[in-house]
Image (tube, rainbow, N blue to C red):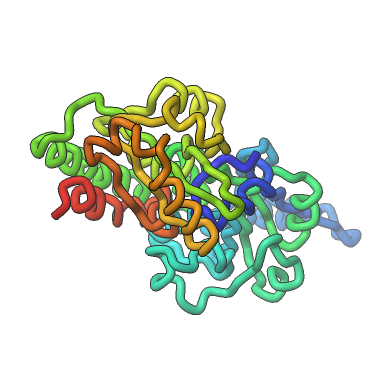
Length: 330
């Protein structure tokens, strides 16, 4: 299963996507036209040296060894953590526009071309990318996409530091990645200190729920907002949620009857976009089983817009400001 973050509106998309696609780049084959022995020994090494300066071999998430540009200039990013690239100062030329609509990223990506979902081969060809980053592990799709341009698979549900360092390496932004991670760690530490100084106890647990059309209830685990909440110094997952995280599960559908097993000291609700899911959420919050949860009785339930509470680097910067407002009601 495609394990990861995003809105309830995209949960069906996640379920359809496989663990992330990687694209392999095509290898270059040099053909010689009966050149003289002297030309072969003097010109070929120069050409090889020049190629080595502009391309290199990169081993992607699904272990393809891909010849990629040393410093990519025209990147298509087909995944839901586009904000990771923005944090590194890279604006892709093509994205899944549906994945950023209504998010904190939208205003920063105005005018970027939509390559669709599934990724449109025709549209991608027209953009003339020199690198495609593809968050899906379907080999059949990978083979088709990798014919457009060097393509690498990327696990968008890895931990933040792993994602940023991988992209820093791939995009020739290693120092930028380290600088961003260092600055982000300081901001996170300051945020949690502020929260602990204002009554949030060390070791408190948190659980994140959302509803999908059809009255389908999901517990979020290794995707989206929980990735942020469960950072070092933050809230802890309950044992049953930790088990899902250990299994690399982004989210899991549960029945309302199981709510007491998944509930935590503090509960977060991701407000859905779909009107039917909004009604289901309202009905759940009025139910007897919900009203009996300790966190509900203690007034420790909080709401976030599902489209904004994502785990990409740029959205996390937004959450650093927003979480204290929500928890401390400021």
